[in-house]
Length: 154
Image (tube, rainbow, N blue to C red; front, side):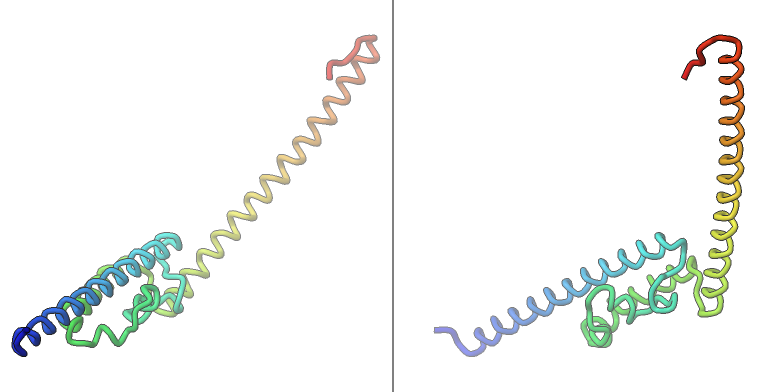
């Protein structure tokens, strides 16, 4: 039979192992959240598409499926939260941030796409007219071939 001290030691070791497992699981979820945030930022040319363009601890926690209050607990306060804040600082350097800057950036991109769309539309119209003209020339040449007694090739 175990003594109460050895039982307490075993229980304490079990609790510590469980706490470590939970901490690692939380960190793993946050890493997936970071990867998802990066993917979204790259996909949207440097703009974070959610939360009004603001990427924060809470937003990362939401992406990771982690309760933001976990970062304030002793197990994460001096490690995970610090790492997450450092990562956010690095990412924000390369991002367009701030409500007004994001709005200006989006408006500018929309204008660029409108311009590109209008240029394509104009090019399409020109090519369509050129095709129409080419078909008229072909019909005229086929008519001349028929008038000369030949059979036009199709």
